[in-house]
Length: 57
Image 1 (cartoon, rainbow, N blue to C red):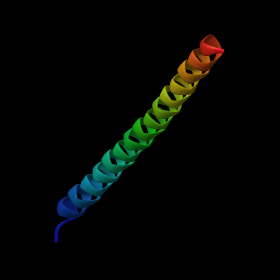
Image 2: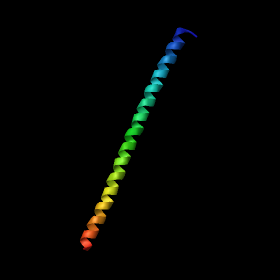
Image 3: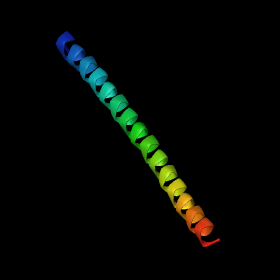
Image 4: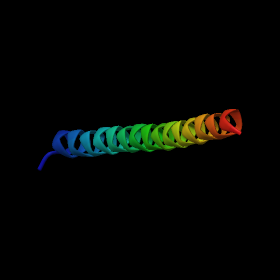
């Protein structure tokens, strides 16, 4: 293999590793946002239930 082929090989490896790191970070961020959204929805349901019970009493 020539030197140019090695250079291209290493550059492509670095690029693909960077792409993988960015994708993993995006997936992690989306997962965190989804967890916060689910928690907010649960709190809203509990709040509505509490308001309904207090209104009934």
